[in-house]
Amino acid sequence: MQNAYGDSVQVNGKNMVVEIVGENHDGPPIILLPGLGEPSPILEFRPLASELSKKYEVITIEPFGYGLSDSTKRKRNYKAAFHE
Image 1 (tube, rainbow, N blue to C red):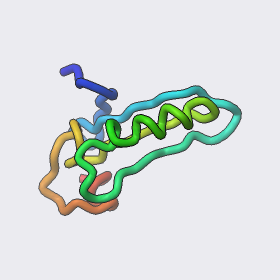
Image 2: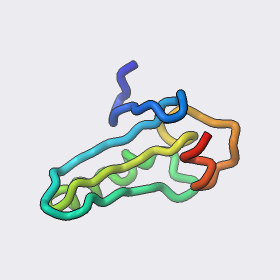
Image 3: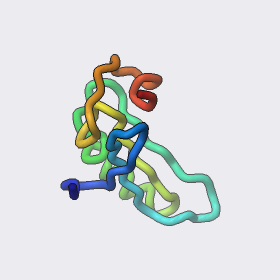
Image 4: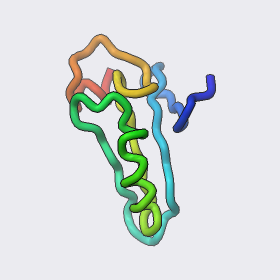
């Protein structure tokens, strides 16, 4: 299945959507994670990621239960969002 945005990656048998913009500019990448209540982190962070991508590689992650990532029956918190 092709997403409307981002790329799906398999994590513990489920799809998690990520978007990577920018290039490695001899520094560590910036990883953007959502707070609770952000329905689509990739779309919400896109203006910030675009600006940061001029100097950094920026990875925006939609954990399970967010945006186009698969849902989960676990509670929404950072520990549960990344581990099934």
